Image (cartoon, rainbow, N blue to C red; front, side, top):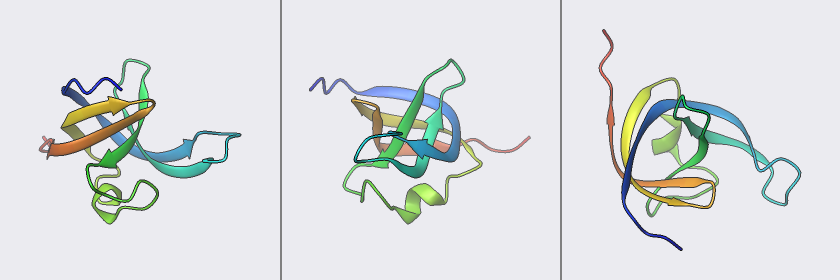
Length: 83
């Protein structure tokens, strides 16, 4: 697994993840606005249900962490202020 740290900005929303697989569920995702959507996780958090990630729904964030498969596992994030 590539563990290069990256920073990604985008909008957080809830949508279906891993359709048709054993992991098929509705979860929290980060849409980077450039055609990539990542299942959003917090390092050390529950990958299926994490209230810290739920609180970000509807917000624009910039997160830092690693991409593993289709997941963005963040250990740091900032919420963009509303203008």
